[in-house]
Image (cartoon, rainbow, N blue to C red; front, side, top):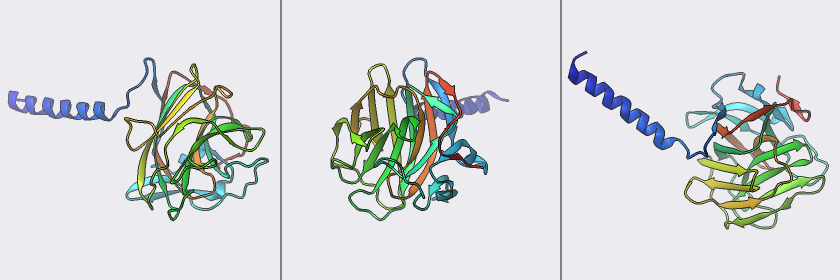
Length: 239
């Protein structure tokens, strides 16, 4: 390889690494990639447990393979709480940074939503982050379900976001169990759209879904200091 060609290859490699570094999130010391899923393989569904497996399928939107919530789940929770849940099975996360792309296939309206679930320890013990078009006591907030109907507890939130119709959006969530803080960002990662604080559930499953709408999930990445392997004892894992 002559010098000119070597320098050209080195420049291309440097540019590629620089681009990757720019795309990578800023992580606390000691964090590493713990889980990744882009739904390109047919057995990707086996990573999850669902409130109703028949409501979920592998799909594609705008050339992106995804997990699609295509109908309402035949699920009746004991307390007023989300119906459509897909949890990463057999993995418990404490501190984490999550990045994911979400898309709503519901016609726009005030409570048009997609949800993130975390600290999930049981079908009636978990947190969820309801991200919706308009905020009110039951929408666009961070909620806890603890043997009772969901209760919001965000310390800060915005008036809402715009899902649009069949548009991909980038979401980032950060949890620190030492301080109890949870932050979520929507497209713009420079300022959170919500900030909450609670230490009831310090470790649990992470998941995705909607209270009672439909939508799609892809490009999941979760970083953290560690992950615990534990079989999910609720809902049913996809076959």
